[in-house]
Image (cartoon, helix red, strand yellow):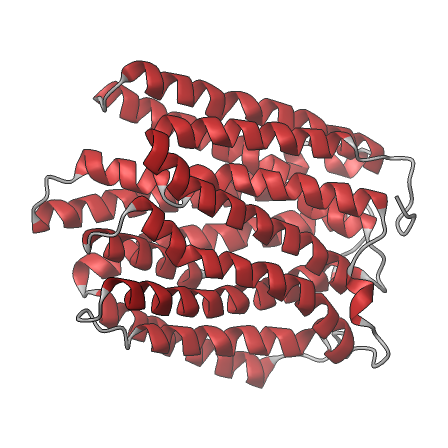
Length: 401
């Protein structure tokens, strides 16, 4: 997750300085998100068929290969060959990240204690720490770009990740499921009412985040903070990376705190399903009000920058509770026999939401600037709220819709 976050910032800021438009920047991440959809859908079956460790090892190895490939990018290439090459490498990176993530999340269902909110607590800690590390990666990527440049940065990350892969291969304990030979790929598609509607809510929730997070806010802040000089660019990179890192770290911390905030240890599952609806409703107001503030301001101003930073941090806190609830509910709704496939299906919807948000981020920023990005985020949150509203506490796992 550290290299995943760092790579995103390296690619975004490096290619923005090369003159890529917001839509072209969004293109760089499209295959990353498409790969996430395909990977999560198939990774659940692969893990059920061949075991969880196989998907974890594959994810780490592919990320090393992707970083090494990106170091071969030639600045002398024409625009579109560069775009397609980076899209392909980002696609491989997306495969790597989702193979690793699906493996870790599925293992929690099998290893976590079930009493006294144990499952929610373990899910929240894993998810929160994962995102906090990714946030540090955003800062690391921006800092490396400013200090040592693009190619040395990706080579350094490839070397570090190769060492981690070797350590995992050496020290991986026994005990995780080894897979079932008779598992069919068609079993990946869930027939459970709650899993399907939760996946729909997840799709729109992450679309609402990425519609401003991927392109809109970084490019807006770059325009506000950089004076166009090399030193100004370095300062802007550091400040943008710091904000993205802080947002993601605080988001991860809020995710880890969600069980305590919601008093999950003493509440039944039915009440937590209701909380998923309520917190989605609370989230809607934040991007809607921020869109209105940016539109009324008409031009960048110090008070507007402060308002955006504060508002987006608030968005992150509420978003984190929504995300943590979803991550708990998918494991609560799934059975041990289907956990890798249900988690894979759910994270396929997560990746589809990121793809939707990525596409809309570049498009909405190009057409209407930051107000359009934030307004679109509010619309997507409303759709997530509708999906969460269809969850049924009276249904048991495995009951078809």
